[in-house]
Structures are given as structure tokens and as C-alpha cells.
Length: 258
Ligand code: COA
Picture 1 (cartoon, rainbow, N blue to C red):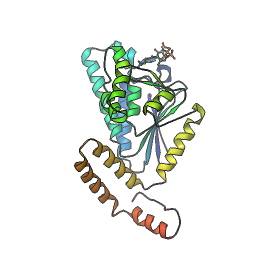
Picture 2 (cartoon, rainbow, N blue to C red):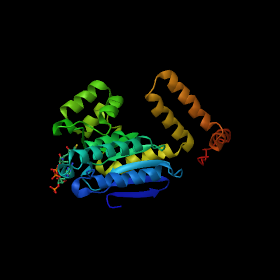
Picture 3 (tube, rainbow, N blue to C red):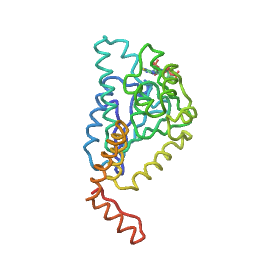
Picture 4 (cartoon, protein in one colour):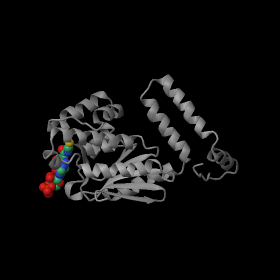
């Protein structure tokens, strides 16, 4: 793969967008490679968390590749927009918790990729925005749906209709990112978050995520039924028994994901 770096370290999948000379813009080839990596991650039960980041100092991702876009027919643009939407749905549906480590520019599809993740940690120098209306289009990879669900309708309308480019501090104030930190501390900040996730039982983490994400898109009654079903999955696990044993023995549990 030329456009994606993928490494697995200590049960964490690190997926790096790797087109730094183009601000990690999302061309069709990159999207196909990303799709392949996500398919692998989705079914790998040894992976307990996933981190997305951008290669280089400047960008997480500057979104759709506007140079490529200029060469495409309307039908090819439709193909690309469908692909990016599908790939971000794959991210959204990953069973493992996902973190976007936003090391710089996250515009258009770059911000939409981050919105498909569970957590967004940004460096203080990051710039974020759904800038599409300034380009004669609209966010087409989930932005008009995920942003209002995250920060509310009015703030999402404001950000999308004005195509605002936010500083990291503004993104924190709007509730778009969960944490900001200096650029040199970004990896540490992400690592701290990872450690707090990895300390807990993997099946419980995945079922809690499933319950929240499925439940958010339905009514309370249905959501509560989803929660009950998800709880059932945790009941027969060895990790649940181990947690009770560890509590009685006044020690930390050792979870195996079983
Ligand atoms: N698609 C393709 N190439 C892109 C790109 C994009 N979305 N964004 C940046 N690049 C390329 C530039 O064309 C330039 O390439 P070049 O050196 O061959 O000319 C290189 O990345 C560096 O960008 P440059 O504009 O020179 O850097 P900058 O620091 O002045 O500005 C941005 C960076 C990201 C703020 C600016 O390029 C920009 O606004 N890009 C468009 C982002 C956007 O609106 N994305 C939403 C798409 S829907």
C-alpha cells in the first residue's frame, strides 16, 4: 500500500494517511487502501483499539483530493463520494474504540473521517472545518448527519453553512474535539486515552460501544432493549468472572477478551 501505513502495536491498530505532500488528501486509491485495512481490522479480534492519524507535520487530512476531483466526470465524482461515505461507515461501525489523532489540518472529508471516530484528540495547531459549501458542494461523507448528532443542530448549521475553519480551541469549545494538547504531546495524550480504554474488558468495551451507537439512532424503548441484549453478551464471559474474583482479592483484573 502506498497511501496508507498500517501497523499493529500492543493490540492497537495505527492507521496513518500517507500522502503528506498532498496534505493527506483522500484520492480514490487511498480510499480503496483504507477500505481494505478496515475490513482486516473489523474481523481481527486481537485488535482492541484503532488510532487514525496523518503523516507529516501539517495535516491530518485536507479532505477530498481537489486536484483529482478536477479531472473527474460527474459519474466518477459520484463513485468517489459513494466510496468515501462507505469507507467512513466502516470506521463508524468498527467494533473497537476509535481515536482520531488530529495533528494538523482536518478539512472537509478529513474532518468527516474524524467525526466517524469515537474520540477526537487534536494538537493546538490543528484547523478543522466542513468547508464544502465554499466549494459548491455539501459534506457528503456523513458530515451533515454526524456533526449535528455530536454538537446539536444549530451549531452544526452554523459551521456547515458558513464553511468555518476552526482553530483547535474553537473546535473544543464547539464540542467537535474531546481534547487538545501541544503538538509534541499529541502521541502521549492519545496513549493516555488508549491506556484507560485498554484497562477495561474488551468484550464489555465493544458491547458498550455497540449499545450506545445503535441506541442513539433509535427511540429510548428500543435503545434499552438493545442495551439489555448487549449486556447478555457480557454475562457468560470469563472476564466478568475475573473482575469479581479480582475485586474479592483486592487486585486489578487481568482481562483476556473471553
Ligand atoms: N486536495 C489535493 N491537494 C491538496 C489539498 C486537497 N484537498 N489540500 C492541499 N493540497 C495540496 C496543495 O495543492 C499543495 O500542493 P502543491 O505543492 O503541489 O501545490 C500542497 O497540498 C500544500 O498545500 P498548500 O495550499 O500549498 O499549503 P498551505 O499550508 O498554504 O494550505 C490548506 C493548506 C489545506 C489550508 C489549503 O491547501 C487548502 O485550503 N486546501 C483545501 C482544503 C479543503 O477545502 N478541503 C475540503 C475538500 S472538500
